[in-house]
Structure formats: C-alpha cells, structure tokens
Image 1 (tube, rainbow, N blue to C red):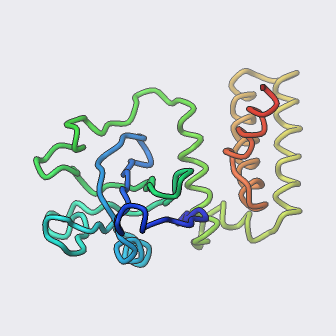
Image 2 (cartoon, rainbow, N blue to C red):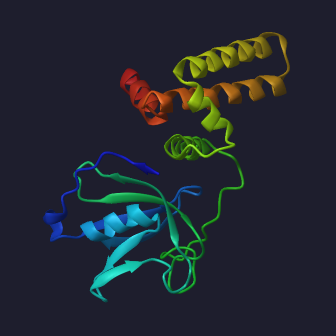
Length: 206
C-alpha cells in the first residue's frame, strides 16, 4: 500500500481530520469521513478504511454491517497536513441510502480509456513494489534490480523508434505502451513517480 510521508496535524481540528474517499479506478469521490489517530492506525493495519463516528462516538469501519468495505490503496495528506485523500477499491455502494456515492452519483468508469489510467497504473506498480507478490512480471523486474530495469527501458525505446520509422501504427502504439510501462517501473524503483515527471515538465513549461 502507498502511504506517502505525512505529518498530520490532528490537534488543529480538535483531534479529527477529514478524509476524502476516492475510488482509485474511476477517480470518483465516494464520501467524506473523519479520522482520529487511532482510526488512521487501524486503517493502515487492517487495510479497510476506518473512521471515527461522531454520532456513535467510536471507531467505525465502513462496511462492518453491510459488508461494503473500502479496501485501502493509498493515503496522502494535503499541503496543510490537515486533510487526507484516501484512494480505495470499494466493495459495493458507499452511501447508507444504497447509492454508489454520498452524492448520489454512479461510480462508473469512463467508457473511453483516458490519461487518468496512467495514475491508476502508477498506483498499481507502486503496490507491486511494496508487496512483491509472487508470479507477477512487475515483481520479477523489481527483483532483477535497477540495471536490468534500465536495460528494458532502453530496449523498449529502441523498439518504439523502429516501429515509428519502419513499422506499423499498431506496432508503434504497442511498443510505446511497453516503453511507458517500463519507464514507470524504473521511476518507482528509483523512488520517483509520474507525478515527479509532471512536476518537472510543469516547471519547464513555466
């Protein structure tokens, strides 16, 4: 799981911090809850999002009654360290009314594949790097180390150039996709992500 470095200020809001819950695949905002330090610790420990219920005055794991758990993917803090963005894989409708989100929206993935999938892919590869499940091609790359991963990026770059100059359009897109995938693996192995690339490009653009 991806837990970015955080120094959360729980005391600013009396011990509770708002947690925005977002579906990692669709990017839909599902709900807003509140966490104290104990709820955050339990969330990390169990992998199921747990809040502090102000009405029940106790910890409350979303789905403990309905079974519609929010399976944790990543947690990050905002710039003021007083709000969290938690990305999840929901096990069912999130709202107690039965709707997908607490705003009555359908939590459906866009029918078209768009650039937001790259963010999902980055999170997926980061999770592979943290958990290193057996039988995964991505895991095998990480185990081979930086040199081999860098070599794969070079190989895919050459194949992309060949397809661009002497190949087919389909082949070019296929090899370019391989190149981007292996580049993300290399970035992750070095402790970086596509976000760092975006920041660098934005800086140059300015």
